[in-house]
Image (cartoon, rainbow, N blue to C red; front, top):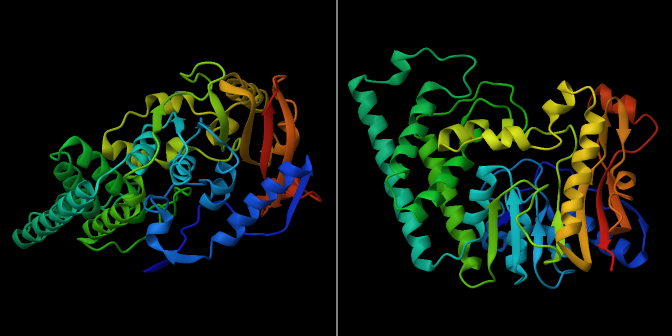
Length: 401
């Protein structure tokens, strides 16, 4: 069956690209952006998308863009902000070894599930257990309604809650059943449950916490959970035989790696002051029982920091310098670092990513940048970028030596 590629929340649509710097690297960066622009309407067999689409993740890198960059690196690839694991999945597709880190415990578990080698037997068991759990939880809900013992009768529908009572109870029932499974199956099924959280909540979207009315019928969470299990099963076929890929929880500014051990880096660090990944995944983290303490404390470039810190520009510059220095430390001489990052507004002024990255660390040389225009949203951006384009960039740096 052919399906349409599920796009991330970024705007990689326009084939109109500007570039500067080394011609060879500019061509590579332009190619990566155009690949992403041409990919969002593509139709192809579901299995060709691997595990990219089964779990939503705000502003993840487009797989087609990442695929072009992965092929430029021979050897071990690092992504210190691995998020949902796009770089790691594409590294497996290209038969490259890779390691990814993220401060978000959900990201690490999701990336592990998407990249760990899983046999045909595992995939069959995954689907069997998901089907059994979904049927049992749906049946329990019907029995509860038949006897009148419904949580919605005991609790008013709190307008500030992200879930309707019957939806929350069904999610909790799914979680309780999943937690009885063996560890490997349990982790995979928890990611399937995590994938539907926003869909069945009252949240407007992954990045918009405003609550809106949604008509979520009883039994729909179980049905969607089962659908995600099928998507995961179908996408995991490529992980049976492929190089080792690691996903670990760590601060990108303090990577547990030795000096000069990585052949190349492909990553998308947070766009300063744009997203709060902790808040995006707050309901998921709570439902799955994952601690969010380190994420709240160590998340860099967060939107909440931009709002509450008067010196956010200085804070972000320090954070940017620290994680770029760490990438420089672990990359081998001659290794290339590809970063995807967008222009934004800091303290009312435009922050141009391609310029800010030019002189980040004296161990690195700036090679090239290519970007495409992004939509200006809100009065703040329109005022700051008056007469100037706002762009999303792919930047290439090289370790000297």
